[in-house]
Image (cartoon, rainbow, N blue to C red; front, side, top):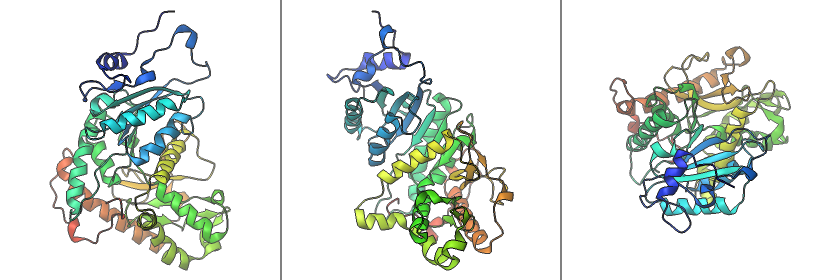
Length: 402
């Protein structure tokens, strides 16, 4: 029976494909469909009528360790649901091009029914085309002797380009999650360079910090993870982050009443703030699998309704917040979702925000983010020039994520 013609993006990519596996195009800058994913359905191969419309998920750093876990979770239906077909659009670099094809080959061999397309490329404008979700994982690590301001600038330039590409070619309702560090400020840069997109749809990942906090509360209290709720990570994804035990609950009771404040202030808080470094000392590298799980958790929190009375942490734009946090930052705060991909911040009236310890720590993290923003003011359109004094401060970036 006759084949339906391939979509423009696939048709153009496949026409350029030269390798035996049908993978990357001769011009490595071309976006290319991969192997079996260049196939288009015949009339006899219709997808189940119960399936939703295919969504396009773009992933940067797609050949990295985090993506090596995450992509298979996405393709399996574990994240978006068993009735949600998905097209993966994978962004790599010239250096990672071969590895990116290896990832596509493994996805091909895994036979995921929901995975309808895989495309690989190194040009953000091609990879981000029509993306409904953009998971920006790729970023450069901090090198020996590198000042924090240098890394802010180097990675910031990456997110300038990716923000501009999203602004030009992505879906107008694209949801963006920045994982590459320093993720809060990188998310701000990307958002400011995408003026035609809703800034509320740009997130930075703090869900891993929330998951770590729930784990440590569970261990100390003797309850299991699913009894821990209402945990917020406030602020920056750095050692100034604030794991909020004041509003957290264990078995629906205030965490402070079950564990005790002394341990929460003196042991729990620094343990969460430095958990990444502790893992590296044991494992020899930064977290990958648990980061992938937290990305999946973050997405699920936006595409499924938040349980009644609970909330989740996400770093988003502070404009219009009720918590007294300065506007113009990407700062982690508590949010809820109806399951449609959007969110609302938890009303301040539901939170205890007058706790002196909590107020002091939240303000310190906001101050750090303001200083980071000053360091990248040259990367933010229409931002007044500002002096960068962050190198004179104590190094608060998380070990292994520098």
